Image (spheres, rainbow, N blue to C red):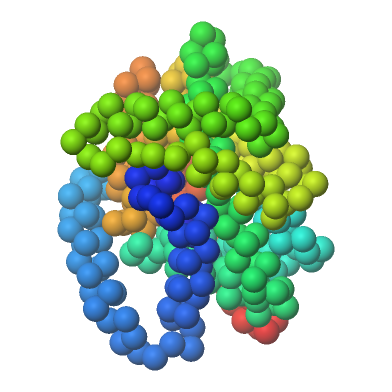
Length: 361
């Protein structure tokens, strides 16, 4: 589950991304439509519904095209569908483990139910990322966790998840040197292991050392200022990145290595779901190009004008897969299969989790 667009960390001074995440969770926790007055925040709701309606109208053809490919689902074997479901379950398991580490709690149930419910709300509510995080916060507090520590933990989790997904395109550079992935489960596993190991190594370096992270901040700041000469120059980005990194380390403490492994595992299994969908229908894509397409889709999913980036992800992912050499028909079908497991199926799971939490409360 994500809350705000990760790119905002380099565009909105001087408040840090972590500060805005904490503010969003605390501010929207009172706006969750649980025990709320009907019509509350009506103006904001109407505004978001209008923006969402216009956006969905613009991307509606892409949604129809992707969803219409369900008739070709028989191209997937039962084993392939079960494999993709298992990969998504592993991705969720990594996220639950990460949140449990950050929250420093032993029970799994409140972490799992709150994450599923918050994630589902984020995928259906206009601008729902903050609402989803706030619902998870409320459910965790109702389960007995301390409010202040819960806000800090959820903020650290989101920061770490953002940081890793933004770093993933770097891993595509060596992967581009590899040829196409054949219909071989062992080769797909090798690709996933390589992504996990390299991602964990890069993440550990940036979390443990100041100089590499500061160098990246200076590079991004320099490029941004050259590209936007007419805008106010961006300043102090390296220092802000270091503050966000320190916020993560302060929350996680000595558990940061396990948290990093869980975060990289979360994105690795998610990426492998898309790669497995392509291989299952006979496409032989380059793993590096698919990784770039996957990263682009994750950024598109943060666009707050449609729930969960609905429409934007479908349009962007199919286009990027086509640029990666996948045939248009295969790109549409693979996108449908990936979104089926990563977007649509978690919705009823979230509703069931919320109902389970309500009965327990």
